Amino acid sequence: MNYPRTALFLITALLLTCGAGVAEDAPVSSALLGTPRIRIYPRRAELVHKFTDTLLTSAHKEFMEHVAQRKYSAMDVPYAEVGPDQPYPPTSFTLRLPIVNADGTEPKDGNDGVFDIVGCKAVTCVLSSWNTAKGFAPALVRHHTDFAKKHGYRLDGPLLLRLYIEKSENNAALPFEGLSPMTPVDKQDFAVFCGSGVTGFAVMAASSALWSTGATVFPVSDADFEDSRFLRKCQGFVFPSGNMNELRDKVTEAAMTRLRDFIQAGGIYIGFCAGAYLASSAVRWNDVAAPSFLALFGGTAVGPIAGIGANSTVVGGVSLTDIKLFDGISRKRQMAYFQGPWFDTTGTKDVTVLATYDANEKPAIIALPCGRGRVVLCGPNLEFDLTSNQDGFNWPESSGVKDPECDWDVIARMVDWAFKRRELGGGKGQ
Image (tube, rainbow, N blue to C red):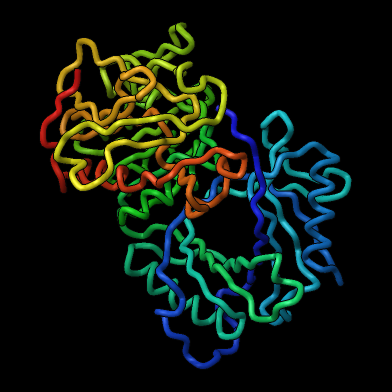
């Protein structure tokens, strides 16, 4: 599925030194730095240029004008690399902006005649907030180092400082969001696929939603997926939204078999939208049979659903099943929908319908055992939070699509079931 590449209204700054050589200010309480969060930033091509004696707003304007002229689409916010001793706001920096071509393809590394284009891999970051430049860097590095160690990671890159551009020109005491890249050391809860066919927005949303449940995550590339050694480092695998057919030419059946064996041996699989099509034994797309891959679910994934909005970004009504798993949370929902499937469970066993679409009363979310493992498949995109940008971006709500509530509480219940911390409590599928 193709999503518009809407830029956010933030600009970020990257502090090149993670504490090394930075003078220590008076100790800053970790409590003041906010509760850390985890998010995966997807693989991307970045437009890069060094600016000298230039304001951030001017550089941002020049970048966005260049993007429009070359018909690129912005994948995320622009940000600037800023040295540790520079004043705030900075006037000399390297600006970077994740982009794609007009047709959605990723630009090749090189120079487009004005700016450089550099490829970057997916990375897991820990995020915290702070409201002043003074004392920020050394305190945040300590804060993130402790967080990484506690959760089985190690810091693995520079500290990123995010600031609000509308305040950056006139305010010396700025609100910041600090990001530190991390690499897993111990086994983590979920490996999140970030390779071919997966949309960058969906990677950020799924990883943010999973962390909100307390689950840890790390990214998996095409090469990682083919190698399969990542399966030793996780308890579950997540395939976010995107286009499963783009994966077909990038991975072998042997890699798919290893993932299937991992699930059947006791692993977890969670598929959102494209990830739900991927896991089904049969797929019908616009009434035409399409290739299937993993066959974790023995039925058919059918889509898109014209009654909701087959070719647009919409919010559709979804009703959670009256089972114990969802006790205490609202069962009538509005969820983002981007051409995901409903599930034909005819002839299957042990499939529990967790939710149905209001448009056709067909299964929208299902759960099932797979050997000793557990599988959750979601047609709607409940990983996207349309009430805020805590999922890493303000689309699709910026285009006028509204949702009265975040659905991450539903994801939390599904994750609890997958890890056998909760049981379903009735409501067997149809």
